[in-house]
Length: 114
Image (cartoon, rainbow, N blue to C red):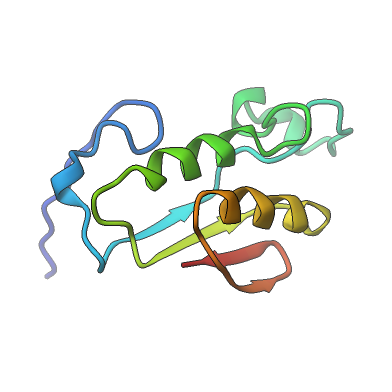
């Protein structure tokens, strides 16, 4: 039997995590809302809360906030994995680059930054 110590925090993206908790071995896996507000979604997705799907005008609002928050950490995570639509990858890379992150790989909906 495996045991784990899980702590739940409530807040805005990574803000509730103390700065000293981050180190160079940290990894962020982010599946944030990334669908543009005016995007037509399929009927299955209509059952989800809109706040779980839509991410602003271009869908990348929450990723802008995430990279901004991570950029001010004393020790940055080694990797940030994101999920977004392939047509958004270029802009997402631009956002990440503006905060000093480098795109390592993109595969379908997933991008890996360091």
